[in-house]
Amino acid sequence: MRVNHVGEICAQALYNAQRLTAREASERSHFEQAARDETDHLAWTRQRLAELQSRPSLLNPLWYVGAFGIGCIAGRTSRSLSLGFVAETERQVEAHLDSHLSRLPADDHASRAIVQQMKDDEARHASEAEAAGASALPPPVRWLMRVGAWVMTTTAHRL
Image (cartoon, rainbow, N blue to C red; front, side, top):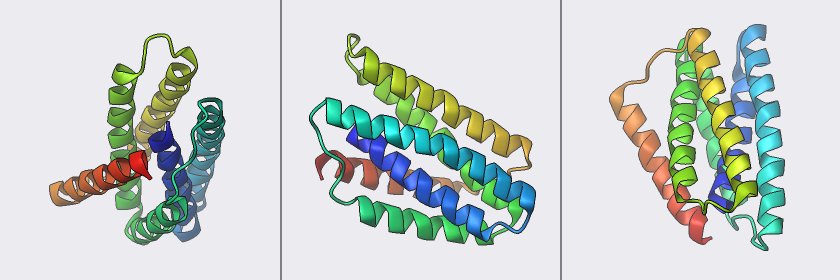
């Protein structure tokens, strides 16, 4: 659950940065709505960590700053690439959450419900970004995103 919490910290940073750098009101509105969903996810994962007598990642400030910087870069590109970054991010998160669901104990209904709702919301965010005109990102960018996510999840699991 710590890794999922870190993901929500990063989502807040990404959406806030992209909202601040968006050129169009409709684009800002998209990021504001998505950030509201991610705020719920952040609260759910934080509460579940407490219930499991665990703690958030010690590196949360670092994750936030890094993701905010990436969000600023994405937000300063074209509208279609910025939305493409959202779509790709959410598709990768959706895959991570699907993998997490397969590893959660069957009797951990609370964690399963949280992860499933997050997965559904992330899929919706990706679909909305695609419907709003997201461009597919080049393969090297998608690969770098996967590598970055692997570093984050591997580190956050431990720290």
